[in-house]
Amino acid sequence: MPYSYDVKIDFYNDWIQHLKRSLISLGYEPPESPKEISFQYFNFLRRIVPPIPRKVLLSREFTFRNDMREGLELIIEKVEKGIDLGPHLSSNIFDVEYNDDLLNDWGIYHLHLGTKIRKKDGLIERTGPLLFVRFDNQFAYFINIMNHGSWTNQDMVRIIHKNWPSSIKSFRLKEISGVHPRLTNKDIYKLRRGGANSVIEIEDGVVYAP
Image (cartoon, rainbow, N blue to C red):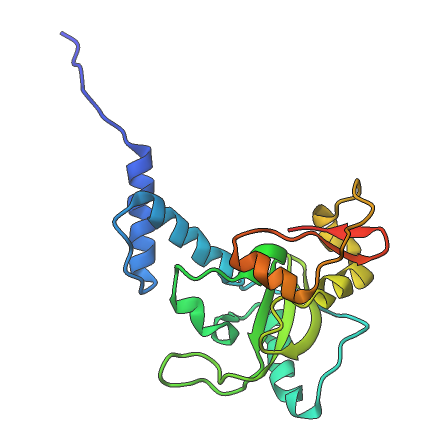
């Protein structure tokens, strides 16, 4: 007589439990909602930089003060060797619900240029000027060093376009010839606060959108 089995497989629940355990192992308290667990996990993944060796590319506009040299060289060494950049990230990395609008829009990270680790949280010492950079699996595109709070500065997209246009070609709207009126950085800030994307014209006939 053949045997019969009643086997129930719930891949979705297994996946959610895996994400939940992953969040716990990272030191986070996961929410109850399966949807929120997924959101928090992938939001966290989005905000970390995979530690793989990359070639550093500096934009033609890149400048820095001499007192930033040591911190900058430390980051370059870590990038080239594939060392974890987590300590240089925002302190908001501990909040899995936090949305980094600049990162979400353009894939641009900001890194602190300190050289010493803080004992209280394991992060590098905080700095006012920040390194703004994009990553892919081969390169680290060092855009420039700008002041803290430059989250809506359109010059970053402009610099990427002038130096490495192929790296953001998926963001370009070739079918649109212009934006009238052109958005200011303050306009972009207001749109983000309202949960809306912005379309920016960085030069005549060159339009990008997240």
